[in-house]
Image (cartoon, rainbow, N blue to C red; front, side, top):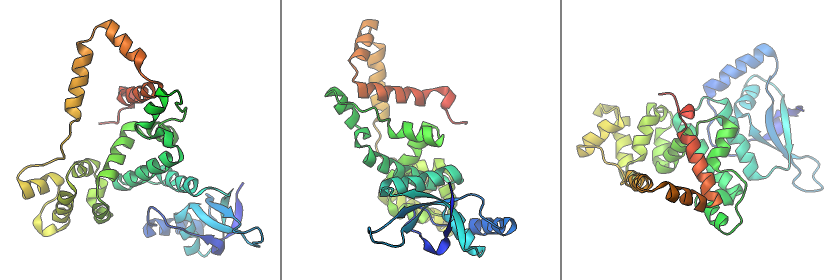
Length: 287
């Protein structure tokens, strides 16, 4: 149940995403009309010591609502209070709040999902790539679901969207991500995916060309053609590996296929099920 909390007592820590002042202004106008904040924020409450007279209040979710309440002149704000929450769990609350409540552009969504993956795997190290299969072979497989499955279930995203977003965030250099904030390129997922396939040095040159309007370069492909004559991507052996797998399967008899499936570890079977779910046409993103 929400409680009314003095705004001046709430501490705002480091956030993954800066507050959008235009959005804050819109919310503030709504607060002035209603006279109050309709949707409670979420804060953590913790006493630094046993003898502390006042607890530390730290914002978990609702940075825009808190900023808008201040702008509207309110002294108190309704808040859902979580006691003694761990730092990683607190960060997950912030991430999920943004992923669920805000219309994030592809770049922001990629950053949030990549950070969510990092935190999830830190909380559940047994779900990291390669670990689940090894544990299963030694009879210690965990029932904890993979990051992609957990995120898809909690956030309602298509697994392919999650996979692509994480690829963007982890493949772009921090400098490039910083330079892309607020640009049209940050709103175009296909452009970001192509950019993410380039070497780090090439990424910097491409972004510089696009952002410097005097060059008249408006796309990653055009920038690649300007700098090298043709698009260059980091060597990708995925297609060759797929061909080998498909050839081996197609040339195997029914008995061999059944034996192969039986020999899969518990971890490999979970991974295979996740891959089959991702390939299901019913869950594909609209073209």
